Image (cartoon, rainbow, N blue to C red):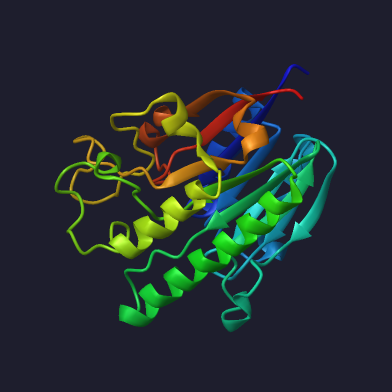
Length: 261
């Protein structure tokens, strides 16, 4: 093997999108695929079907909402199934962390922050603060790692189509953007922006208001790499074709390829 491929995909229900995910795995063969919004408990996750494709599964599920999972082609060790400090909302399945091929990969489904009023937004900020603390711990450990998933953050104005979101949306608010920048200031690299500094590269198009045909999208799914992995970055791809399929997720897969260490 000459490279390692890591991918992330908010599938908006694994049951509804199972055919899309299995086809994409067969066509792209990532070493790791992190899923968000699987919307099922672990007992309802199609583990056997993924194992038949050669993937080990680590599932952090929740009935009907949220839920994350890691699919690995190689041996993996489960490190965490909850972001440290999340005891205030243990029922929200939003974080999974694994170790595979000498790389730590953390998959996240960050709260949207637009529901639940100011309490919902405050929860989003607390989650981001805990994520920052975890990233600092991983940086200090000097282990190569990646934070991947649906961050529900448009880091800059280039990351959403003009007019798609109101100024006060929780994906844009300055407190959220500041916390995203704080991850970069720790030393993490936004893989897409390292290779494409400017211009749109959307990962999400709402089902409403003709957002897909009008290309009114958002970039909210990200891959952040530790310094050791950033040095190995080769490509970062957004698979737009998936959004145009029948009954698609409103998100598309994002993947990076890394030089083999």
